[in-house]
Image (tube, rainbow, N blue to C red; front, side):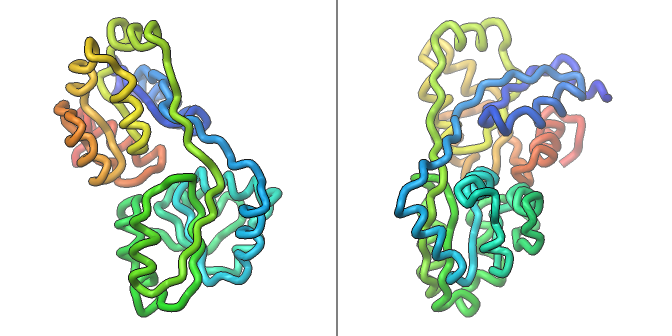
Length: 262
């Protein structure tokens, strides 16, 4: 156990089922982890359309998982069996998602060494036009995700279909909880792991606490999320995590408070 985060209060906005490992790491470093999930992840209810799309995976050429939630939700819908994809070319948006796939027995996973977003994934040689032209690619994601990945692959000649296996539901907090957060706990740093979570946090905080919010330093995932934060009005400074894993976020937390060099 170290004391490198002693005296630091860090607001963790990840969904509750994903937040605990990072919160534990913060507490192991003598920091205070404030749990305030901005989104709840709910698996999609089984329906004939999802079942049809899942049943067609064995006939596709490649499968792309955009998050750990996509892996876990797909596994539940498939009855804990991802055997249907083990002989496919499997891509993950980042190392954290790749680790989730390997944990359920999918050993061969291709993912970007640097970055954990669609842009990084699209830069991989195996996803360039000569390698995807006329190939059928299934993207497993949550409802209402970004269109960039599918649009780019289609422009490169791929045939792309979505399977949306979960949905993100914004969490709502009462005024008393938010008042306690800003006037009693007052975080020194906020960890943001999704653009939707960032927007929900900003929308939820009323004008009397908005200044405290936007001047608090952030740890974010990727340049796109940083640009979103800047466009909303955050001015407290940002550190970009190299990857979406707990380890990657923890390294960014250390950089933000100056105990680890960039």
